Length: 304
View 1 (cartoon, rainbow, N blue to C red):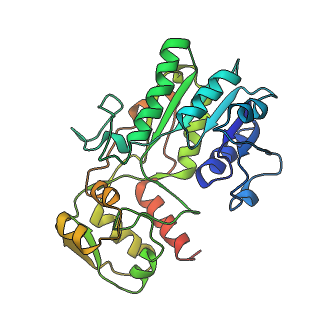
View 2: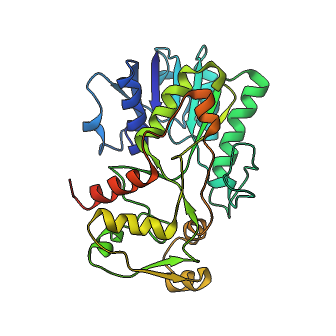
């Protein structure tokens, strides 16, 4: 297959491009040329083109060679419109979304049938963009599929921290034996997906005919509690976790510079059923939640 990956020089995008290349596909990465951090990790066989996907003429030029599959790691409404207008004959359009807009979950584990709208403004755009792609499929046969990962982890990106972000001193704090404040009672469920497992889901969705018009949640098979998450990071580095549980409102007051949406989201359950991806795509996470957490912590600490 001929595959183009928009945003293919970013962390998630280049991982998706590499997965298609490993599967033997003819891969092109497309970006604005502003990121180069992961270029060295992309095989020489993968072509690189520069385009602004928010500009219709730029997208038309980028797609002029013809592709079977268009992947967008950071989609927008404009990009979907441009792809629909200029990528005639594609077999699949797949973009990366998020499970974030399901929160707060009405039941655990969550699945693709649950309401997907907005969570305190943080994931509104995900719902808008997903809806756009799926409506185009329903009205015009646009061959869209949507992949919704939980929080993505793996070497190359800082671990999720105790404030709901990716602060650079989270792992150094654990190494230094500092107390790690956590919002709530520490029992909120956290379920990561390894970036390589996420990338494999895109490859499988591109090859599965039944994926057209569908949404797939992808994550590890099981969740861990927030407290256990910190313990795993500490254990990976040969340290003992020092956890302090703080009521959410007090936590927000204690860390006024932290992102409020991220911290509130961290205190919600993140736990999803992956039966649909398994049954329809033949997808498997490729490792456990614990393994993904430990690997990322060791990478962030420079431990090999």
